[in-house]
View 1 (cartoon, helix red, strand yellow):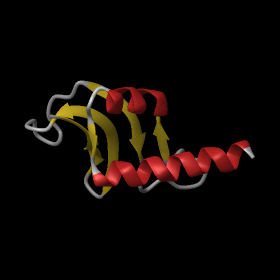
View 2 (tube, one colour):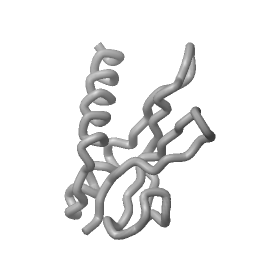
View 3 (cartoon, helix red, strand yellow):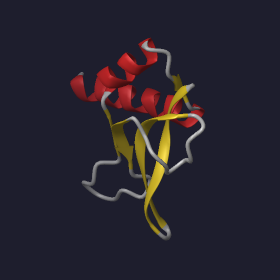
View 4 (cartoon, helix red, strand yellow):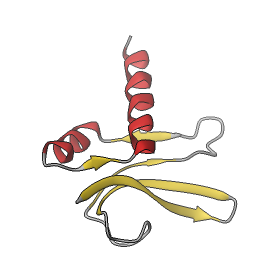
Length: 87
């Protein structure tokens, strides 16, 4: 099964996550199929906290990929933020 989930990067005490498409059996930070965006939980000031390519996510979901619970929450947050910025 293909899943859209976060893979951790960054350094000690400074996490940084990539939103990736990977086979469920692969390790969290192992090989991936596609990279769809990023999440920086410790962003400050003008740093971008979250970016997700929504069209790519929808394409992968149409092909049968499952979203992890955390990525579902981040998608809602990102879409709410882009709608607020557009209004």
